[in-house]
Image 1 (cartoon, helix red, strand yellow):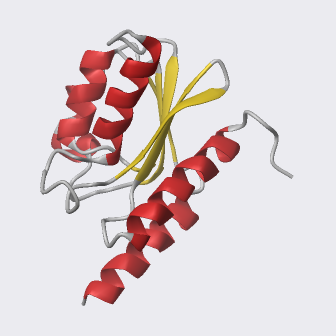
Image 2 (image 1 turned 180 degrees about the horizontal axis):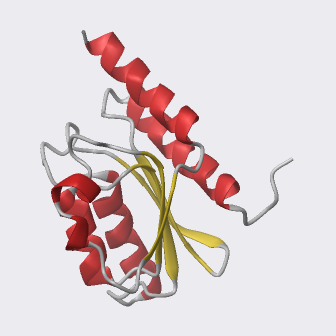
Length: 147
């Protein structure tokens, strides 16, 4: 049984968002932002629906969290995202000063770690590999169906 407030619990919430993206024929990436053990923002990729290449799950979640808190800085928050952030999302996370990023699947081709490892704020804690298989399997299924 998952402990409430565990990284796995919140990653399951992000996976729910990724599955919504999958149903909408969007790349299935989901994100939630947590403050004081409460999900304050939920988002998934909307690049196709909004015809906007910047409408990644993380970007949507940052905006929603900032609106919820009435503050552009998210130092006391944790971002849970099913895929390693890209350079754009990592850069946005830098500007939000988010306290922690937890991601599931790594992205060796487009993830920030290989392309721009210094794009995360130096005070941001990073935790990777949480529910990696589940996150990765959903992405693989999506792209297999596209081929």
